Amino acid sequence: MHSKTIAELAEGLKIGDFSSEELTKSFLQRIKQYDAELNSFITVSEDHALAQARAADELIAKGASSVLTGIPLAQKDIFCTNGIKTTCGSKMLDNFIAPYDATVIHHFNQAGAVMLGKTNMDEFAMGSSNETSFYGSVKNPWDTTTVPGGSSGGSAAAVAARLAPAATGTDTGGSIRQPAALCGLTGLKPTYGRISRYGMIAFASSLDQAGTFTQTAEDSALMLNVMSGFDEKDSTSVDKDVPDYTANLSQPLNGLKIGLPKEYFGEGLNADVAKVVEEAVAEYKKMGAEIVDISLPNSHLSVPAYYVIAPAECSSNLSRFDGVRFGYRCEDPKDLEDMYKRSRGEGFGEEVKRRIMIGAYVLSAGYYDAYYLKAQKIRRLISDDFKAAFEKVDVIMGPTSPEVAFKAGEKSDDPVSMYLSDIYTIATNLAGLPGMSVPCGFSNKMPVGLQIIGNYFDESRLLNIAHQYQQTTGWHKQMPEGYK
Ligand code: GLN
Image 1 (cartoon, helix red, strand yellow):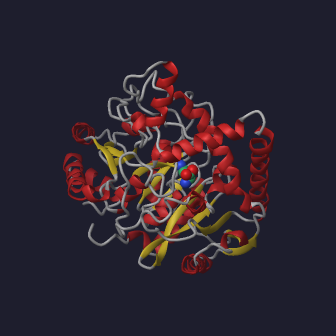
Image 2 (cartoon, protein in one colour):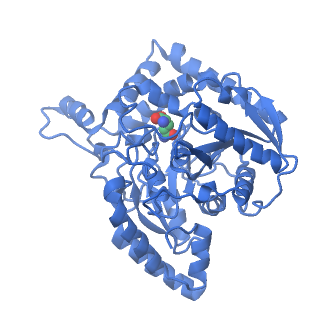
Image 3 (cartoon, helix red, strand yellow):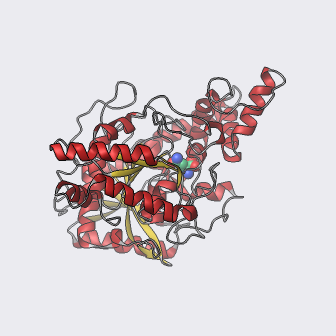
């Protein structure tokens, strides 16, 4: 049962091959068996999951179910879940039980999906290796001496090891696509505003977007159908119809124009990864696509601009964690100032503190124009590069990550080299565009991801392009040894 896709499981539930309760129990059993090693879950909500599964079985018996009814899923621990601990990977929220559901969680509940638990993540979603979590690092099931990527590394590891058929993630600079690439999964970050951010703990509000980790593009479409849509509780969610994302999956790709940015194939890209990605592009050519060389001339500025804008926004967003209203409070404070200082000092980890300090600096009166304003101007140039590219091509392809999963600890003392893990993903967030990562082969026995970037709200096309590739190749079906 555990190696099936959402679509296959939904069929099994419908025809009565198994119940949601049996299915949920089998995934809970796998979590017990494997997660001590992987550490992909912070909280396993067993009783809640079984109650949801029984309720789903009743709906199915009554004929009142939809596709996701009874399907077990893992949720990134950045989404608030009513009555169940929500930590965002931080000591600061170790005792936080949200009094409400994030809109994404609400949608899944309405659809009758089952939540197995909350997945591990880099603290406040800051990281590319899942080594900054207060709850310990997550291991990559393909090789447990390597990282799963971050910040949604728990979701990626859990789905790769089939401890859940699919999971949610969030992507501020690459946190869905990069771990999807490193763990051999299909990852989708939709257009900014496609999915409500209400109840999703904020890192950098103008960049954060929820999305999916699945085995296939079809599953991703099924989840997106449920997650998307306008939400009056999030003024940045876009009031635009939600199409049926499964409707165009089978469209042929004849005449599709694929742009290859020369900046995504230059220095810094591992030669083996480049080869695997080029072979994937060649496969698209065989399917009738036309390959066009393009340039995104400001690409080299995306990491520096991001590391001004994201810290600026996080320093503001994280100022609410002050030990007063909720979250961690230090023991025996001397006075108010001591309480603020020690609660924040003890509650946040190193990487979060580094970002808050950078953010406060670039927003300060003397440096605002020099850093923050300049970064915003660069952000516009980067968006304009994409706009020009999409006049010539339908989608853009390239590698998701410059290399396969690296060894745990390898980049922990070198933040800049860690930041460069997202060199090909960050520009998409700065522009607000949708992007996917699709498994396209292996290098040194580790998965490689192909990135597909689309124009605004062109998720249907991205899913179609990924789905067609998954009809002719089998990379997405590979599973790590030891978890089969
Ligand atoms: N790795 C990037 C960072 O640390 C992106 C994280 C994310 O997308 N949440 O900021």
